[in-house]
Image 1 (cartoon, rainbow over the protein chains, first blue to last red):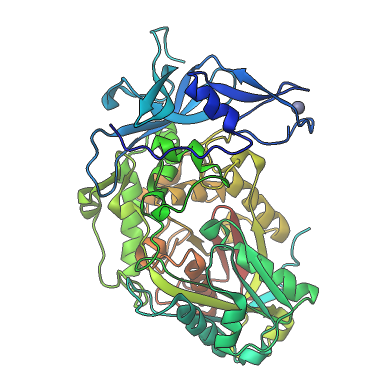
Image 2 (cartoon, rainbow over the protein chains, first blue to last red):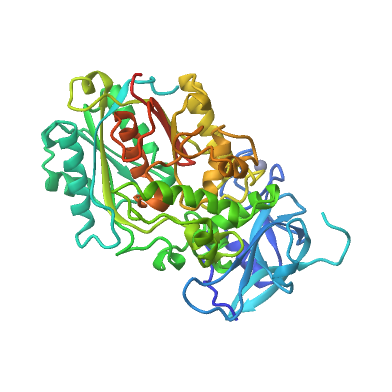
Length: 135
Length: 387
Ligand SMILES: [Zn+2]
């Protein structure tokens, strides 16, 4: 198990972590104009709106960039793959890839979300989607 | 509106030795560097009426005044984003002196970044949690060191243009070659080969090896900024600030976690800074005689060579391999050795080297240098010497 530093939810993003705990991937969607904003902000930059809906995302997207994260000084139980995921809804999100060997990871590969618990911390994780050709 | 080209000048520079364990307080390092810069300008502490540093510097302005003997200040200001804003310090000081808000502003940056708080350690020693800038989006997933944080950006650049870590190593070899003949450099007399680089351990495989990472350093640097008109009557040869700008755009979304920009194979904030500098001065990359390029990690030199127009998108690897950044070639980069070779004083030591190059007093002098670029991605400047 990797050692996980827990998130510290704050007013503008606690909906996200509540969703993650329920195994839902959520993003802020402006109640007035529909803009999706991740990471979330208190105000909609497009229309100035302050009302938001928590929109459930498909969890489908592709790997935009990725690295292998190893601890600089302590041995890791297993290296973690960190990726920028470009979600099909048009926003990007940092998360981990799991269920895939490092040598098989490529930019632009299709992935889908699932959720895993690490020492009591639930995090969104992505793994290769059922084959349908690369994005 | 840009600063009036050439209206402000760098009248004095100062620094401590660059080490791994200074053995004294950060305030002492700041005091020594400031006092040296004021003396270099031919001024006294009582002539200084403004101070500028970074928001992340821990040295309090009033404590510094008490220590150095500065009597009164009408301008105290700080610039954001750490080393990325290292050239913003000059923009800030120049705005003060050219507007009349102050007559002589001293810039300082001093820390025990190796022997005390080490930026490169996981989670910055446990201090990074919550907003801003939203560490929750990154820390839980394992992005807990600058090397990892930045590699997630560089990977897209490498992939877009087919670069390998060996390409980055060719920059490090040049930086260490330059440092080897610079007595101020930590790596003085210690050049490396590309093979040495490739034998250094992985930090973030397959992107960064140890020798792609900047040093961790203890030290202090300072500069005195005043108007060019006044500087002409002071002790040192005139070095003018031709332009200085910051470069931030909403696309970057976050200065360290720059993952939301449209195309991560480019550095759009630096491209904006480049447009500001060249637009304000009418200069082009061909007019620049040497470039001091901030490199917390070697790949960001490549992105900035492209952003500031010294070569085209994706061309930096070939540009470096063909020798264009060496002293005596197209655009000498970091002739002092940069943050990899000289020291990591948050990029401000790069600006001091730019001043030396224009005075003609650098350890590795670029012959006839009359325009120098200093670039730190999110801020940049051009220095001149009236020639
Ligand atoms: Zn809106």
